[in-house]
Image (cartoon, rainbow over all chains, first blue to last red; front, top):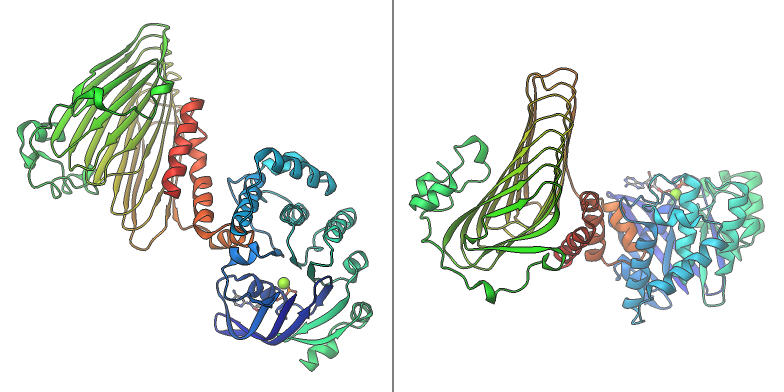
Length: 248
Length: 343
Ligand SMILES: Nc1ncnc2c1ncn2[C@@H]1O[C@H](COP(=O)(O)OP(=O)(O)OP(=O)(O)O)[C@@H](O)[C@H]1O
Ligand SMILES: [Mg+2]
């Protein structure tokens, strides 16, 4: 599904990703762990096309299609969704308005009919209930004044509404209380399917108890330096990144 | 020296220009070499409907300077009047309209400036007088043509206890000045003066207000927000004077602009002059760009760049639109903005 090969990327002329390669087949969940500053968020921004992140070499394809040639919104319409490590505030735009605009823009780009207002509201009520989000919160300006945990939950709500095919979760667990973590994990697991794939960036083994990964990668020094099964996360939790940081 | 006398005498030297302090950013003298000939009379019956016709009890039309001259509201009476200021062609014209709202009368003025592609020079003078406890909401939608020059000058006289609320929305013109001067008597009279400008291409709009608090216990609230792109230029001049003895005045003024291109310009001059004691006055003025991070966030969710810009801009402006009291007019204003941001 997602294929990254020899990816080099720079921010402000500083090379952050230095030959990163990664394959995430459809149906799988891969976790990425790694020390602070390793380039995990940088990878998520390069995959989603944020300006200021310059790809200097390498290739990224989604189902064989060159992802790097597409605009951020075109990538979204192809099904790429990023749950931001630090979700942005959108003053003056109610969450529901924002999400409906996004959903219909994606559908339009894919040549699908727009959802009507009643259909949209019905879907939003159902998803909000599943994620235990107070419906009134969806009428407020998106993320403005929301707590850290509420913002993360709102990311997952958007994900549930947009039902993307390739999901990137950048530290979605950080800031969540124990109950919220379980709710969010249930929301993510609900999207697991043979035609979807996920990249879960996290620092903590705990999330991976709920969202069981098929593979765990260690990202250090701008490259994937080790890949293993779920046990690798346990090992990292015990021993830290020392030996990988040195290898990088 | 004034725009009216320049039109009457056809003497361009009478036009205000950049040497006049109050007009230094809206130079008419330098722009207009020769005052155009008087505008032709228009066949009013041939005009399309105005933007507010459906909401009004009465529709008054001033076409190329001719037509309605007076709006009156009896004591305790309440009505909604659409006032259409229509300019067509390349001529010059001026009109004067007086509005008298007597004790406890209520009036909603839904005013529209409607221009065509001509190079007209249009001046409109409005004299508004509000009796004790009268309430007026004035909503102005200025849709001038790109070649037109428009000057609108409103003078508002409030009695104690009166309420005057105004929202001026404009897309500018070749050069345009929308001016409001208010004599505020205090005495629990309440004033709101809001503005919105959305300027593209080479358009210019100047929102100038001057409020003088003359006695104790008056309130004024002002919020103007605008967006300029391409080579457009916006001018905001907001002056609040709190005269000696106008104690316990409460006045706030905000002006916030988004500049969406390097060649667009915003000139702002907020002024508070306070000669009284125990007043609460504040002003804020900011000029910025759209938040790139928020734009990326919206695009990551699938919203194309233009739509993302329009959405964020609309939200920025929305704060002013939300303050419009007349509900149906508020929705017309919202739609008018949406059209301009997406057009
Ligand atoms: N805009 C920027 N300007 C300069 N340096 C940047 C910028 N963005 C990221 N970097 C640098 O790139 C490196 C990788 O940052 P990134 O955010 O990708 O790390 P991360 O692996 O996500 O870390 P964390 O675990 O703390 O979230 C860091 O050294 C960071 O300082
Ligand atoms: Mg990060």
